[in-house]
Length: 212
Image 1 (tube, one colour):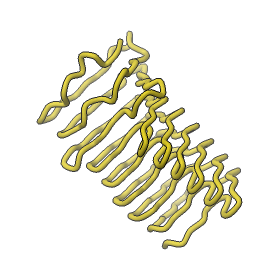
Image 2 (cartoon, helix red, strand yellow):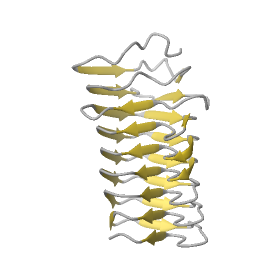
Image 3 (cartoon, one colour):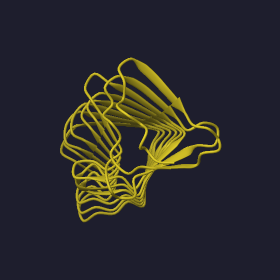
């Protein structure tokens, strides 16, 4: 199936739960902007949303709340984000971001609002800055999640320009950058029970920080 019949994301609260018979949804354009409370559940077997390198996937507006569960967001591509551009609130659980790219920043996610990522994986994404996550401002929280094999000039795993990033029981591994292989930070970074291993960069293989 594709996204021809998605329509405009409505006001109010909307939940989409996929049938176990659906494994992949091919996107032929960026999905409509999220303007309200919206939940997308991949169901018991999970669903991949595949943009085939043609467009980004989700754009979340300032007053909106998007929840993603049991999904794979893959092959998204846009100038300022690969899969998700968030100005509102995003919750990600049991999901994977892979193969997403951006020419400038936020290979998988660009965050200006609040994003919470739990038991999820960001792997194989790339961007000029922030191959996995570009935290332009706002708050990013990762719990029990893995950021691996991402690429970017600054902060291949996570690039924190401003705002706050909290990592709890997270793993950052094998990310590669010029500066800050795992993390590049100009903002506020807190790590608890987390692991950085096998990241590489000319400056700061694990972390390069001028923030707090």
